[in-house]
Length: 405
Picture 1 (spheres, rainbow, N blue to C red):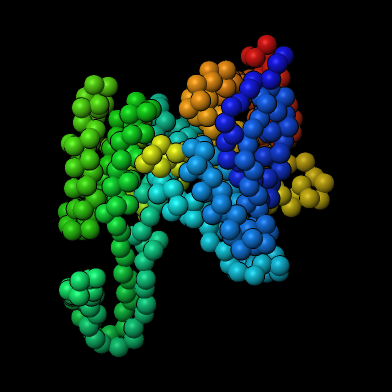
Picture 2 (picture 1 turned 90 degrees about the vertical axis):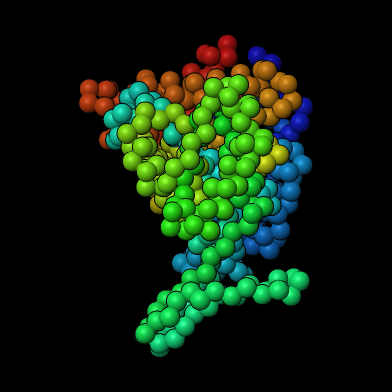
């Protein structure tokens, strides 16, 4: 068969460890036999980031802004242990995801991949729940310190105009710990716009939750900006599509989510989204079955798996051992990017291919062929066998070829 043509390349960001191995296999077995793949390639592997002093990450993010679509492999964010493991490192480089999110001003949307053979722990969940995480500020850009004597802590803002505003944080009678957090109205507004637009694009209701009854000014700012954006820009389109925008407190949202059937986007502040995305992915089955899409306000999208580089399996693979690493989220990152590229360029064959790739992957699982991490999650009576990663990809390739024939 003739290969499916692409007109515009997408940005390809390679990564680290076992996911880098899977990345190459997915291209070799599932994509390149069927698609005349065009990518602008950036190696975001840790050692190459070190060689370029992380300029490659900035270049990849700027290329994504230019081309509109990217697909990213999981990468290492080095800590002290990694510095010992990789003595070549000259610096404890920042998270590539954080750098890319900052340059794109993006919001992260994480959605579980679900199949009938694996039921969520929350039995009334019937549809995926997408977590939209505001990936800027709050505790992740906070400053903190410890004091060991009685005293008073104040917080002061000095404006560019010279004006100052000071508040007393607290007076203490002994040792204490302090933390100062911030967010920016511009970032909150971008977060809101990305959430509303993604809800429209995917035709899902949008829930948003904070704790504005306690953090009346801080969380109140989030609530107010979301409401302004909804009323001024998105309300009419939501009503045309029969969609609902719903705001509630974070504790009420948790209770409602547990009792719901799913099928909506749940927008959360940075910390809440960090925690709730792991909760949702685990309750649906596995972090290896969780997609992640970074969406910028202008519609630029970067697709990746929600999980890390699978270090333990990588060291087994280096010893020549077969591993049963689950590639589903990485496959869906590629399929999502190819579908988006096809939509933007008007290439219906490319869109169909991306969908066929997802369908073939899901069919393989439903045929009882899966990586070993899923065997303990299947419903009683469902017949499944565990295979290694290469065999799993080969099984998907067979079904994909049948669907495209």
